[in-house]
Length: 445
Ligand code: PLZ
Image (cartoon, rainbow, N blue to C red; front, side):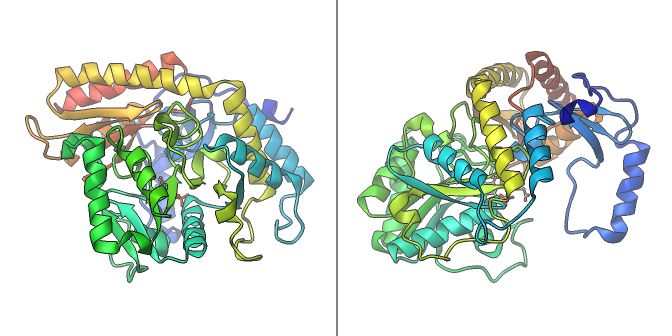
């Protein structure tokens, strides 16, 4: 057994040095000579190995993972089924290029995606390497299939860092600043953000639709692209009814509804996809991250008539659907299914929301607690106001790091702490992480 070679990491958080420890500090110094300064580090400890919900750094600190590498390792680290599938595939063959000589696992991933994504119609997929690449291709397909130019996106949206996806992403700093000029024909409309706009889902949708119709014209719109729960933008859960109203409008006007499920997909929100919670059926779904348990794989899946409208050779890429990543996806999907992690995500969500709501009652800096399933966040504000409190956010995450807990920030205003634990985390581990987070919030209060 390949997986049994590793010594056990254990399940306990353990901090044995200052954070970052001396070995991490040395590596951090070393990287400066050859790693671009354009890449920042949220938590400068260097990881040596990982298992389950624990990462072990080069100083032997055992860190509790409440971030899953930004919603990627949903099934946990070093899962034997995935380790074995990947190891065997590496030994078998690592690459042929699916466009040159194909292989079965690619087809199997597309079969799984057709079955798992919402909608009972015929669906086909194309596989890519990153979320941004999937989004780029979804836009290409929608434009080709409709013959229309415009793409509608939302405030606070995040869709990637390539030229087209930077244009689709809302936030300037750090994603877009001085990287332009950007791709044209992108139109941004207001997102439903219940904590800040106070609107019902229906009213927020009417607001967005009125802007689209007046500023762009429905007949010019190829696609409406939306994260059903926004990720980088602040874990914004739109008010109930917002997504169904937008979906209805796209259907009426021949606009392709593209769901960016890159962060919210694959059981994260307590359903296979976040759109399922309101029964929304997208025309195209972009996935990545949680799809392949840490191997780089992304997909666009959707209505066969749209996906297949593309001329032969119109889609592709050297590595898209790489065989090692493809078997990782199959192992990930089986692990999610076999362990009913979709139900587990809901339980984790209940635990997190209950704990954070009770914390919110005790402190004045938590403006909002929100999320779905194991995708939960707190929005930090100045006491008694809704003014974003980025300083407190930074201090809280810093405290968590010092105590060996990995928690990530997000939000247009840098004032949201998001929790994305691996779905296999135990109750005990999660409660341990939440108690550290609680102490952190109280410490800056
Ligand atoms: N769409 C909804 O969350 C990636 C970005 C990290 P890639 N989010 C993490 C960073 O700062 O670069 C993401 C996402 C949503 C698209 C993407 C892009 O996915 O695999 O990073 O290209």
